[in-house]
Length: 124
Length: 138
Image (cartoon, rainbow over all chains, first blue to last red; front, side, top):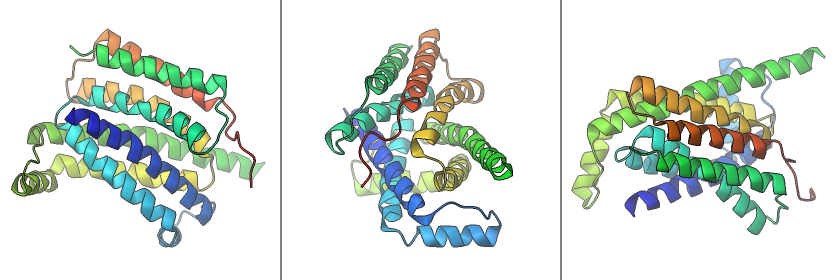
């Protein structure tokens, strides 16, 4: 049961964090200059976007949940199970953002779920 | 034309960094946490004890360094590439994790687990070949 809570945190907070960071970086704009001083400027600009802070907080939560579950289970089980974030993303997109999730995307999500089931069943 | 080639080059380079350092970071964290043992956080003292062991583990710091490298590459690539383009590239990372876990941690990856990783990769690729936008832009 404890593992399930950690997995839910990894999947929920991790996906939410990625979406927030994606939104923040789009606000910052395309990075064209890769010199260290310019990159520092990019990160300083990113830190002024509130989505970045929310994203980092959510990803930090997912990180500590990942550490906890890695102390209990093998990496080759934990990381594939976190692929269930694709199912969470599709469900969240449909019910919270009103996206029209296509049949092909559902098929992909179903394949991910089948793969995760196989990984869990492949436990020795 | 030149800028298009340059855009593709920097996109592929950063995705390559993501695919290497993301799985490597997870495997190093797994190695470090296995040494620490199962996390028990029943009391504040236990939680602080776990935290101090985590923060003094060299392997975990290497893992955090790898994940920071992954994260910086990820942030930079998302400044110009679509999330729906970058995300499917992460499919390869599931195979990479299984390989690294097998060779670095000597984890036994059963044939069924390899099959599961392959099916996950296929699923992620199928998701990546769907339209990135299904709602009207505001």
